Length: 393
Image 1 (cartoon, rainbow, N blue to C red):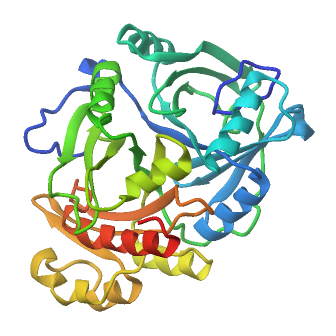
Image 2 (image 1 turned 180 degrees about the vertical axis):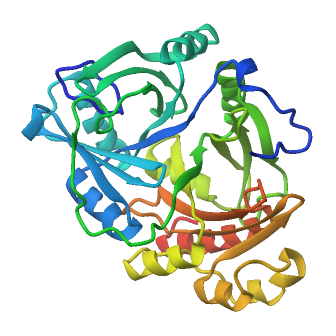
């Protein structure tokens, strides 16, 4: 999470899948309340905040900057339901934290620096993580103002990504001490486009996926939720492997991808090349009305991956009936998938910055706990067409 430079510097009922035992909260070695925020380091936070307000329908709720004593960075906090983004840019680096953010944007472009987790006890979570070999980034410390106290700590994960552990308790202020309430930059849509963060996907180097899966299992007590290997995610030209780790409640889900050896460069290879190493590839946003969301975001200028009409010719045969008619799915290029628990609808944006790195997924779940396995081939062929246009396939 992002704080003012005067304070310690820190970035800012479910169904258990078959084979995965349910785990009570009291028995969880690393309990989490859910995702607290996705924190981006960007070149121009004001412009990025306007983009996510306009194109994603998010509402600006809090701000920290020079006007309020933060001379080093400007941070904008946007929300849509429970989903929270923090967009931070450096004004004038004066500390190691500011220099890190400047280097991060120069090396990676706009990207995610922090997948912050809300926890009931930041000190206990941090102690548990270090006991299990986590890389410490910030020791537990308190931030206090008239609205209460927040306890923060931070540990490292793949690449330069971190997990800030946020204990909010009864804090009533604007995001964190050091932030002030802010008015929306634009009028938000009457019906929000999405209401929560469904999952966050990380890309790591060839041969390191299992290492990071084991890290989450050991450090946070996460369990394997799904895995996709071999021909699960492969086309004629490229392939990747993916495993999904999640906390005991399935509120926090982290798919981790690595490239697989194939004839041509995969989307993971392209990401690693242009991002300059491992990092967060995409954020999936949960929506209750994907048709409304896609229409609204597309009208605001968001570009989505295209899917050939032939995908929809047989969709009903294996996806079955869904809330949205096939003709509407075809019109909007929305994908559908069904598993033993139900079905889901999903669509993916193109990268939202000049580098072919970070993009977003919109997902509407109806019982399914999956990630669209039946769509992998169509999705990855769509990504390959975009790679070919960029000359990166």
